[in-house]
Length: 164
Image (cartoon, rainbow, N blue to C red; front, side, top):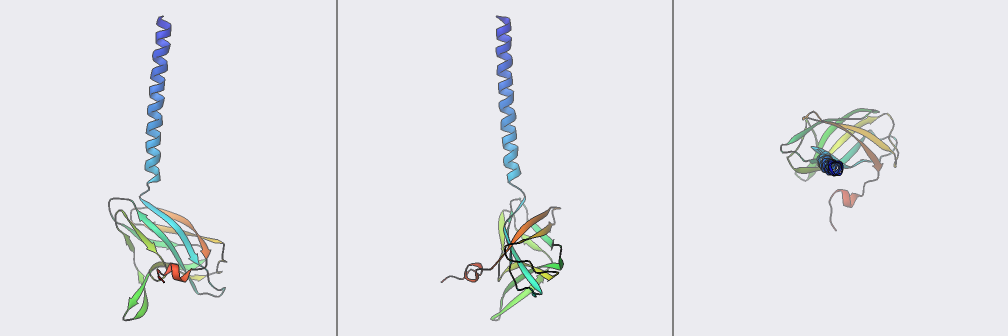
C-alpha cells in the first residue's frame, strides 16, 4: 500500500511539474513572438538595368514602450543606402535624406512610395524582378535586423495610396 501511494504521489508530482514546465515554455514562446521591433512586407521596386538607384519599402512595427530610431540600412552590392522621406511642398514632390527615422512606441511606420523609403544608391548590378535583396537595418536600441526584400513592380495606385 505504501508503495502504491508513493508511486501515485510521484506520478502526480511529475504531472504537475511537467504541466508547469509546459506552461512556462508556452508563455516564454509568446514573449519571443512579440519582438521589440518587427518588420513586415519588405520589397524593392524593380528598375531598368541602368538605374542609378532603387527604393526599398516595408512596414516597421515598434512593440516596445518607448520610441526606437532606425539609424541606418546597408546591403552588399550598393555604394550606400540612405533613409529618405518624400512629400509635397508648394505643389512639388520633394525628397529629403534623413539622419534617422523615429518609430513611436506601440506604432507602425510604413515605408512606401511617395513617403518614407530607403534609397539604394549605385547598385553594382540592378536586381531582377523576382529576386531578393538582403537589407540590414540598425536601430538605436542596439538591435540589428536583416530582411530579404523581394524585387517587384510597384502598383502605382495602390502604393501611393491613391483612391479612385
